[in-house]
Image (cartoon, chains in turn green, brown):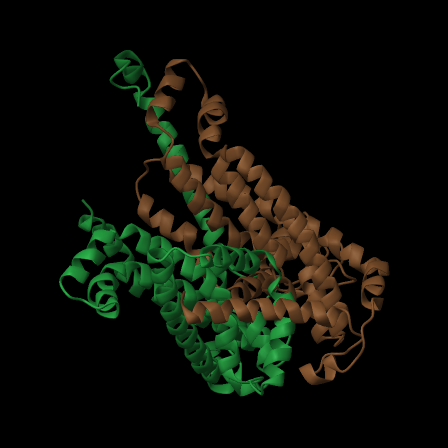
Length: 291
Length: 281
């Protein structure tokens, strides 16, 4: 850093620089290994045969001869894991699509038409962030019970959306704010109706924002334990988190199976980010419109 | 104004109204019709306020939120400082360090339940083989260690939030300031204290408030591991409301505790917003 300013210092500290860099790299490497270790340990355990899980002297590396996918076979074949996977997927898609649709339209109108609603959204957002979800689970339970939606996946979708929409609307409003209004005007001059303008002009530009909203909503509903556990009573309707929670402490379920369920629960979240990443990156090029 | 958004807000406001309404009635968990048929009372509030377990919950919440947030901040800051250096493999390290953020809370919890399992868990094995503790500690099952145990998955899942926020803030600190500090002969600690910290202090404070709010609402880690036990050692307000409503079916008690929580949070928010406005102006 001080190279050009103080060449003398540069010469004498060349070795010191390198040493410091090596030490920093070592520190970063160690930290990363420690932080990622719980996931590694989960994966390692999930690949052990059941007979080797309960060991008083566990080994850090699995020997290749002992690697086994039995735990996965048992979790997928002998628990309702596949049902839970299907339910989680349905609820995730429902919550993500519904809240992205609501948030895009609401974000657009908040961005283009100033109204008292902006404050309303801000307060709803604040409420959603500070109040314990367990407090809202109580009225949600009562409302859905009274309307006959209890023990129905729709109830979980609606509960998830009510938490996600205020925040997602805020995100989309900020996103639309970045798209110059001149584009709206130009489209109107060219004879577009407002829905046409939204569809043909603004939505293509807002794709990265919508992608981020979808990813956020999908992740939030995939990991939700509270609402799914409260609103779904039948085993076959449960989601992955509720299902895994029910496997904890079950004497029929060994630790390698529980860890296999954990590994499976992580995969879709990583996939979501993998697929959404190009959309997020293209958000950088969206700036090219400006000017 | 979009109808979908309006519906969402009505739904949230009606839910809060329902909580308030139920808190004033002597009812068990039931349907709307059953609940609205009973008269009004203030008993729920006197009952909740007179229960020492309510105050224990408040204390446990305070410990959980403070210790959890501070630890997550510490880990997040160290990770951010190291990731901010120009080191080889930086992109890979960044991805790896941020991964826990995307892991579901329930999955983080079972990972730590297994690591801390008394007889076959890795942590007790390491402690045994190093001769530190010869007896197996029941981490999640003993009142002395349960709170510490639920804080571990909490910190593991929430530190990446601090890392992301602080990394962004670190990159906005002007490089020239570091050069000037070096020329003035400032060591690493002085550079951090007088250049880095002032540059990231505001972000750190905001991230801390967000994280504290998150931990205040937290349900997944505690409920799926200890359910608030043993002996109330991990019984935070959020968990207590849930257990009252859905384990004891004491809907009105849970609602009363909820309304009191709401008031407490509102007071804290007023102070926070006032503080934030003072910082901005």
